[in-house]
Length: 536
Ligand code: HEM
Image (cartoon, rainbow, N blue to C red):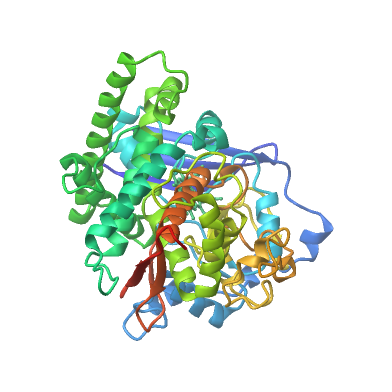
């Protein structure tokens, strides 16, 4: 039977140095230790000496923590957000949750100064653990495909650093990403055409599940960027493999939450549920590699094009890097982008006056509904960009950012030893009046640099002076690598949607979210879409 474990351990080397290693072992056969950071002798500076000992930090013991989840317990049936809020009420703005089943202790902090200290000390290879099932799948279950490559989401240390420095120029360079604008715009047009077939012209409501349609748009968009392939998911006859892939991707965050975030025994015993997860993952791998093979043949027949697409550039690096990166893009780029789009649309629907101001900008960019977006026409969209930022401020799709400390740190006056997890509660802070004036109000003007018109005046004083309070895509060398792609996709879709329709929110209740690894809209989601036309 496979015996797999991965754990973070600290070792004191003879020279007093502490090496921080990730230990991945399978029946003792595959043993990989990644030395993440060498740090000098233990910290002895005044700040550290004066800080309160780590053991005094508020927080439950392991047993108490478990009891909270039992019937009648304080955290029974709570989602991640509710759980964090209750814990904060019980323990304050910094508290520690003991690590269980091989996971490190995690310090939860709601102090932006701690965020800054954590990020400023993360080093060149920041550590964000959490998706051990990825690592297991790629390195232990399918080494035949991945050949030791873990990918961005799960690799750490130098392996992560080498991978990231290879793919950064491909995915983070604005011009490289923007070469997809024309096709992404075409996909958005097709999305609107599809909505038109689902829209009741009398009531202006949709007969279809809007959230699901948005996921199909997000899938079609990211798979074009990653695989240079149109999946046909916005048509009535999608490619059957794409349809299967889309369904698997839909399950992905739920599985990952179950096996990577919640306590699970899979590292010791492969439950039937975990085996099903591996099968799903196998299917995702097979379908994706088939698409890559097909695209590769296409590229070979058409070698002398001037600009190479994202997939060609990734393949030029190394086949395994390309396979792992494409899969990470598909996994990380569907629910995030569709949830973000739905969220921003919801805020604009609840704030019709802001939506009208935005439409003024969009009418200049796209005077005719059927027109096309160009690099030039989409360069200057300050109000749209401010609306996107404001939507993600009120509802950050990733409610917290995570790091493992690679040095001893003082956080909120407590000593925090290296090797501890730190969860930075950005969502709570960006919704607090302490950091954003009138934080409950949707106020895109707080993000503007200068006035746009007499009725659109910049209001930078309503924005936090601390840049660490608002970080929807994370921060530093390990920041979201899909940020530029996500922004381009979201902008393109919102231009089209809000240029075509006046959007209102129909339910009496606010938009609800379920929280797993990210926040996903759920419950009653109904918009009214009234055509705007060309003669406004
Ligand atoms: C609105 C949409 C998105 C949001 C809000 C978002 C947010 C985030 C955040 C907060 C992180 C962690 C960053 C950190 O630890 O500092 C992250 C990591 C990541 N994201 Fe995104 N993301 C989005 C879209 C995408 C897309 C479209 C892709 C596909 C290319 C993507 C791929 C990734 C990957 C691969 C990582 C891991 C990066 C690494 O560890 O080096 N994300 N994302």
